[in-house]
Picture 1 (cartoon, rainbow, N blue to C red):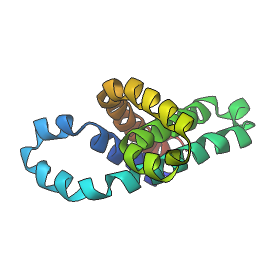
Picture 2: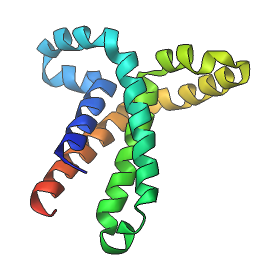
Picture 3: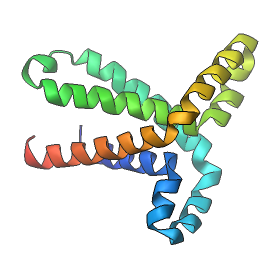
Picture 4: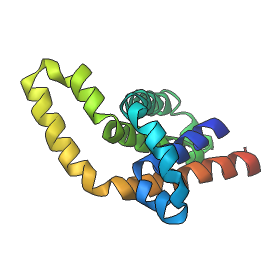
Length: 141
């Protein structure tokens, strides 16, 4: 893991909880409006990247023995990234992947209905994990 991974989690967290950003910086609405057309593709990319991160954590399960905190941080980051990516990219994911199957679309709708209410909290978790990854990388690893 590197600092870039932490920065990506922070950016995803900000995109997932725009009200948090707008409450602190009202001028950020212009930036968020510019990013909005690309949000679906960004979500799709980061959902896939998060899934790959989860897979990689289990491929490197040997790290658990020596660096348990770092391994769990990596896993939590991957899960957060995959879920936030799914939420942000749901429209694109639905159109490209889920639209081929009626059953997959129904499952996707149920999942997104359960995730949307906690989107802001997940965004904050993403920001905190991203900051932790950067700090831990600079101080410990």
